[in-house]
Length: 389
Image (cartoon, rainbow, N blue to C red):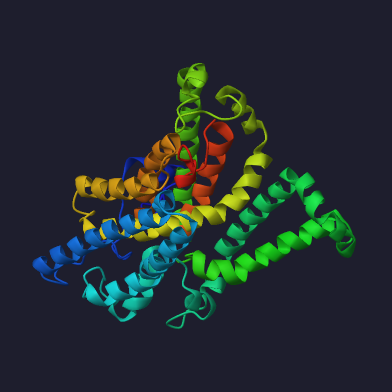
């Protein structure tokens, strides 16, 4: 007979990602009862919502000032707006809230590490000090979780080898003269991949990869990848049967026109997984950067602005607000806005449960890659895509 406390099979845990939401109390999203007065907690929640709304407006102003201003004025505007906005969002805000929240989102035993938690783990990031040094007599995370490090490194290596195969001719064009120094093309590729792996191991992972909960995040990675793949296939079918017959009609509509090969022909990309892996290899970092802005900042802001543990309605509000911000930054690309809104809802729900930003960025990279391969939409966004620009 199976033991009562035996862990559930992975497939069952994967299924639970789609059927239930389990929020951990030690990730800085759920308020601790009695830590502050109800009135103070309400004021803190209002501040989080107001800050997120203000930062969203500033981000949009930084992106879209180019539409109204000339080149010199745009550079000046972005210098005065972008630098303070980024400094607040990514450096000052977590440090300020670690003090101003009064322990509202800290659980017992976390009070002495408020600044570090708010800056690293509560945003889904790795903690570089713990990665190399450890804490409370425990070995460094690099040693303690070496299997997770090796697994992620192996995954990135496979993606880089896929890129080397997919972009072989481009690599020849750019670097062929360097091959003799490495004993040929194979040696050059191996040295390049080894260099990238070392950069991840000693520079990227300490900051980007949260290891203390990565094992838990594995099922959410699988859930996101499967969910993104199904959503992209549905988009492909929508384009095939609804919009492809209207391609010529949509051509004059700048934000709706389709591009490149028809959706049905794009399904052939599924027969070339190395091409998907090659694009995915570069999209991991870009996916992480996007989620650092939207999930790690706006997702956390809205998650604390609403009591997400109290009801599905409050959880939905936080996810919808985050997805709205994610979608609006993709203006004026209508199709990309639709996909990022749906993906933003799903990604935020998963992020709230795993709080592992690298896992989310890695999954995002897959979703963006298959969307690009399987749908006939333009991926350009911003004021340069407006008519007459």
